Image (cartoon, rainbow, N blue to C red; front, side):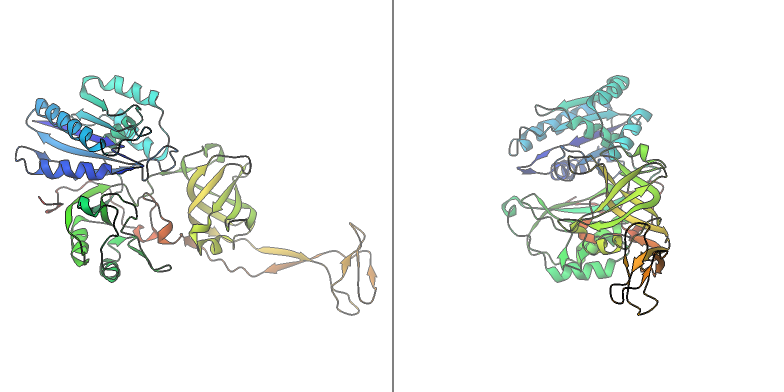
Amino acid sequence: MAIIHIGFDDIDSPFGGCTTDFVSKLVIEWYKRSYLEFIDYPNLIRLCPSVPWKTRGNGAVVIRLKVKDIDMGYKLFEEAVSNAYEYISYFRHPESSPAIALYIGEVSDELKWLGWKAVWDIIPLDLVQRIMDKLGDRIRIKHLGNMKRGIIGALASIGNTLSNTDYTYELIVYRKQEYWGSPRKIDHNSIKEMDHLTRGDTFLNYDYEVDKALITPHGPDPVLLGIRGESPEILTEALNILRINEPIERWIIYRTNQGTDAHLRRITSLNEAYIYTGVIFQGRVSKPPKRIAGGHVIFSISDGSREIDVAAYEPTGKFRDIVEKLWINDLVEVYGIVRPPSSKHGKTINLEKLRVIQVAPKVVYEAPKCPKCGKRMKSMGKGKGYKCPKCKYRDPFARKIPKEIPRELSIGWYQPPPRSFKHLMKPLERFGKEKKHPPKDLHTPWCYPC
């Protein structure tokens, strides 16, 4: 017997297609073969969300199997490659770089490291090549296009085994091809019902602030819907609650790093805030928030010697109202991705979540009131005191008076509305539900038709 891992990335393009759609077809076909044993759910690994050349969600998929012998693994790899060529012929794009990788045996430490790093950082091809050289004949690689970047995701998906780390599940339903591009026919109220009945065990189903369903994409791709949750069992229950008014082609449950904040790493100095990486940083507010053109709210945070801007963008809605209540010296923890500088701004953390740890006193300085008439006086110039504009009283020794303003901000966690969440962002509802070990068995059923 042999263990094999087959990783897929970029089996899509801006014109259409979907890596999970392609893999789901293979999974359904291979599930029917009694001589193949799935040793894990298909893994959907979301990679670094800030990669400039990503296609949509930057997700790679890996299938992990136990097979009779290594030759069987090679045959499955060649079958996957052949099917992929046919699939991408409909969606070929010059900037796509589809790739498939085969790895034989237990995943090596080098590959695990790559799988971890590729989620929060950008991986250069030469680094991947050095790892491939170490793996030797345990791997086979196939590039299906003119570019080679896809091999990074294909290998990283194999290396990210989701062991000793948090994970969730997603049940993805696929449409029949004749329905691609047409409105998705799902009863709107049934999505709300599903969200209400499974709340706490599923997440990011609906945004009630704007009355918007979040389980359905909007493009012409093959996905009908995707439900994210804590267990396969709850996902099949949730699916049965929905009233779907178009035929289902197939569905698959994936084990995934979505909703885990796996793309973020804790840093203690802003020296470590490298562009395109996800960070968790604790520091003091050094410049108060301001709302700029476009509705974005910007403030600065410091580590004591350096500072960086932090931005809550207009699509985060009322979350910006919370951010605007911050003040100088508030102790906060920010979660987000470091955006590179431009001609108009420096490096900026795109804010995904905020923890207020300590609220500092807010003190403003006001001109003194006239002791004779009570009118607010005006400055006569720096160090020259104040003069009353009404009764002309002068006091050359008067100075501004400090006044403490009551704070409207409470200690605690704050997050943007559900519609602003990207794949890897962890909602507060998941706190305390983190998993540490992979599942012992595969829930049945985990695919349809199986």
